[in-house]
Image (cartoon, rainbow, N blue to C red; front, top):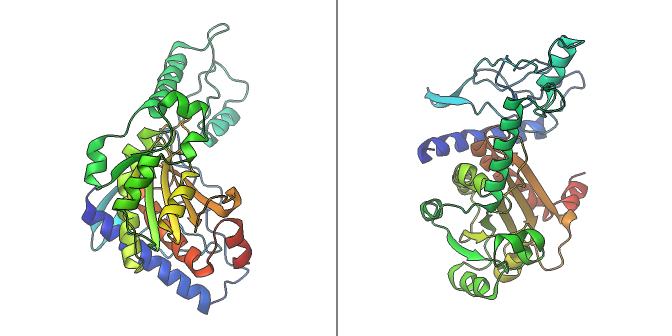
Length: 339
C-alpha cells in the first residue's frame, strides 16, 4: 500500500481517537443513547449485510456514536481519496446458494449460512461431500499447510529494514513438536540483537512468522507502517525493529530481558484455519521479562482483509500502547487499574 495513504489514514484515525477521548472526559454519555451496531465480517460473496438493529459501518460524513470507549472501524473494502479523507465504497454481495436439494426450511438455512463461514448447508452426494465442496476443502487445507511451512519473503524484510534472527528451533518439524524451543532466542540471536538494537526504548516492535508466514506477507507491512506513524504522532520513542524466524509469543520475554523496553509489540502469524490462513495478531506486554505470565499479555487478533483492517489496526495498537504506558500495566492488570 502507498505509505503516503497509510500516513493520511493513520493521522485521521489518531485525531479521531483524541477527539473521542476528549469528549469522554467532558461529556457523560446518556443512558438513552442508542448502542452503535457491530458489523460482522460478511464471509460470503453475496447480499448486503443484514443489520441486526445496529449501525453497520462508519461513513465519512456521519457522526460516530460512542460505544463504551470502543473504536468503530470503517470499511476496508475499496477506498479512494476525496477531499482530505478516505471514502469507503461498499459492494453488494450475494449469499451463496445452499448445496442441499429441497431443504425443509430454506429461509432458516439461508439465515444460518449468512451468519458463519463454517461449512454448513453444503449438501452431499450419497455418503460423500459433493466434488466442488471437497475440492474447496482441499484447497483451504493446502493454504493452511503452506502458511505453516512457508517462509517470509526476504524482499519484504528488506523493504521494512528488518534484520533476521532465529529461535532455538532448527526446522519446522521441531518448531511444531517443541513450542518451548520457539519461545527462546538462540545464543547467536541474542548477540546480534545486543549489537544492533537500541537499548531501553519506550516501544520495541518485533515481527515473527509464528504459525503463518502468509499472514506476515499479506498484512504486516500495512500494520507496521501505520503503527510506526501512530507512535510518531503520539511522540513515543521506538527501538530498532527486527524479525524473529520460527518464533512463539513468549519469545518477547527474551527480548525484554535483553533490551529492557517499556512495551514490546509482537506482530505474529496466527494458527491458520480453513476460513483464513492469513490472519495476523499483535501481542502487547508491559516490561516483559523471564517468568511473565500469560495474563500480563494482551492481544489484538484477526488482523486481515476479512477481519480488522491492517491499516486501522496499526493506528489502534498505538492508542493501546499509550494506555499501557499511562497505567504502567498490560493484560488483566491493565483492566483492573482502569476499573
